[in-house]
Length: 427
Image (tube, rainbow, N blue to C red; front, side, top):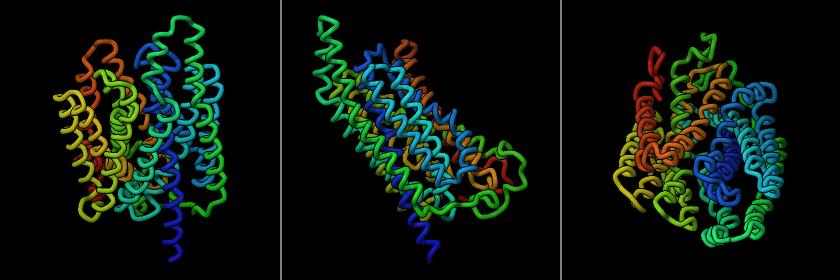
């Protein structure tokens, strides 16, 4: 009974971390319009450097994170990640005082670096803390923690930093002299200082909590995530074809997830909706994702396998994408929010499918998958570039970024997850 109790405690601790992931990650949806106004950015291409800086940190820091984890272990690595995130949060103070968009981006990159370390540790940890067949169920529970926090974060930060946003935007645009305009913008930028100082303090306290916790260490070097030693015969992580295909799958998945969560506001603004409304649109997507996670907890693996859940989710994504394309106004926004439902079970399914059978390469494989989170940097920036440069219409730009991604995810759910294996893993 003791191992079960230890596993339960570990799941609670990791759940707290996933809450932190969600709260900080989904602040970007609010920061995009906030920084566009406060820093007087010219277009959405510049504004979406917010997601680019944040998610590209995963690309650059994932492999170094796996090296750090090999030396520190999971628990100490998680604590270190929280400290790094606290440092990134504190950088928002001088960034706000100087109203420097570049410094805001540095702070976001540092936050992303800390999250890269946390994600590289926590995702394989929660996958292999119990049976691999039910990994998607455990990750779904983590997803609920993540998305509940994500639903709260834009509401809280939006209420603090974008209160009366439409009126402030009007005042700034009507300001006739530079001094009064700068005063308005400085007051607006200063609204982020206290929230991010509080965030930094909380992150440091959580780091100490993790450091002193009873979180058990897991040895993944001698056996793979499914409990056998199939991965030991391989000499390189790049020999696992299903992993390589999984990295691309995760790249595209995170891209469409960020598009549905962070670009929904920009899509609404493009349709002429006011900032006081669009600042809350991210919450609608996350509520939809939350519903999807609840479905996953009760259906995986009892009624549907991880692989089948991924296939169903991909088909739903394709359908909702077409719904966005053929509709307009609040109907289109509803379809974008419903993409959250389609996306919910993708990460919980892709991650365990991709790391299954890696053995001693599990940490490195997890790092490669975490690098795939850079999709959240690339797809939104591609979308805004296509529409703002006038290359394609808003609707076609969205479809071009989303539909091919869901088609590939569908391929991975049907064929890719078993590529390079003698037999399918039976997940």
